[in-house]
Amino acid sequence: MNNQISAAKKDEIRKVADPCTVVIFGASGDLTQRKLMPSLFSLSCEGLLAEQFSVVGVARSEMTDDSFRDQIRAGVEKFARLKPADCDLWDAFSKNMLYHRGNYDDPQTYKDLSKLLAKIDKNVGGACNVLFYLSTPPQLYPIIVKQLGQAGLAQQSDGHWRRIIIEKPFGHDLPSATELNQQVHDVFDEHQVYRIDHYLGKETVQNLLVFRFANAIFEPLWSRNYIDHVQITVAEEVGLGSRAGYYDTAGVMRDMFQNHLLQLLTLVSMEPPAEYDATALRDEKVKVLKAMQRIKPEEVGQYTVRAQYRTYRDEPGVAKGTNTPTFAAVKLFINNWRWRNVPFYLRSGKALGDKMTEINIQFRHVPHLMFPLKPGQQLPPNVLGLCIQPNEGMNLRFETKVPGAGMRTRSVDMNFTYEQDFGKNTLPDAYERLILDALHGDATLFTRSDEIELAWGLVDPILQGWDSEFSPVLAFYESGTWGPGKSDEFMQADGRKWHYACSDC
Ligand code: NDP
Picture 1 (cartoon, rainbow, N blue to C red):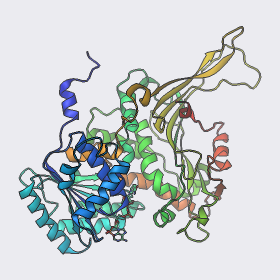
Picture 2 (cartoon, protein in one colour; picture 1 turned 30 degrees about the horizontal axis):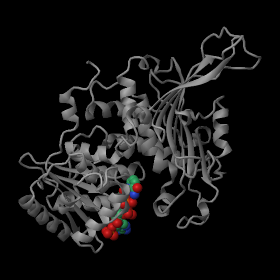
Picture 3 (spheres, rainbow, N blue to C red; picture 1 turned 60 degrees about the vertical axis):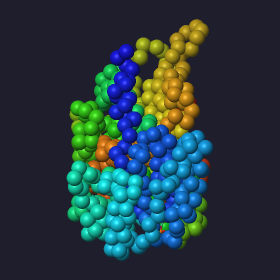
Picture 4 (cartoon, helix red, strand yellow; picture 1 turned 135 degrees about the vertical axis):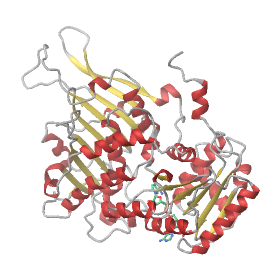
């Protein structure tokens, strides 16, 4: 059957990664324990890692190989999709898991690492292909990259590869991101570099591409001719947690908009790439970012809302009287033929009513309505909700006739959920997908250097405006709500309102 995935394609998708070693810097940290090692273990359970696969954890903490394995096992037990009880591979997996203690700025750490990789290659095999993973605080990225370069560890030879995954945040503004790109490019070629934005590893985000470009029915509607506006919401239910040091200097614009929200926006709005490959897809995303209208610092009062949850200043670790925004709403435009004059409303915040990410596409009203309405009444618009999390799926809201006399109408929902069609717990963690892609050398779902810089170029003027006399007043909102009243007023001023189409998915 045409629409069935061929056996060859399945083999390709489930291809086992090359024999290799993953070297994680910051291996004693939270991300390693909660995401990286649980993902690697799940991949191993799925049979997607080679037999000659090893992990070297690098950090300053005192640990032995065994205590490192114990720490990782605790994380795998708690956070992995597939746990040691689900597959009988823990012993084989953990046997090749080593800990290498050292300071990140000490050349000796890297000389010893080089020897360790040679030893692994002799004993296990696979240590000629190395994926470095930077999972340390970001100020250490340039230091580690430079040391890797000086130790010759970034050099590829004899058909073997060396790659590097770099965690977010990648810079804190355009100059620092540009500088970091230069520092990375001094050592690694761009094709060796994988800047991670874990949102792109989510199945539902990738499904945006399938939804738009594997179905004929939606794309003809996907423009200013039929779409009134687009809303993108990334809401967190939790407040600050333990990340005060980072968050209070970053705020919501750097933490969420520069990466996740702008990535979602590019995927929703880009032109169809000619093929599914890293260059074609990222070229199209870059075109969108280039076509976006920059908000000038003096325009932030018109195009943005910024707010803070009411108890934020009481959180341990934040600066006294801090004005760091934990919520923002922004109106953006893309100046090209497809999207001219279609507003894209983006909002994100902490301590909101729920943890949810959704994209709502509101369609235009019909040009002429033949059914009688009461004076001042307008039919609700058609809204397509692309539900990224937690109710992964999609929801189309449209009008239907209420049974009985007359022509009364009511909005109803047509929806698809991953859970209903594919079963529970079938969605792999975003990190599983992304790490496997990096092991396969596929950078399609990673951010390219020009993309990162263009995104910062859009965010920086907003941040400058917020630091100036043009800034909108910092609003406050109660935890557990959907942000400040100003956010609703922002939409009302344009005759619109925020949608929650996915809560019915
Ligand atoms: P941690 O704060 O847990 O740090 C990781 C490790 O880095 C620590 O275990 C510590 O190891 C070392 N380290 C911490 N501070 C310093 C310092 N000042 N100087 C030298 N070494 C230090 O970070 P996470 O694991 O939470 O995150 C790692 C990276 O991933 C960060 O850049 C973060 O922004 C990013 N990230 C994290 C997410 C998460 O959910 N945790 C989500 C998305 C991105 P040791 O002292 O043993 O050397």
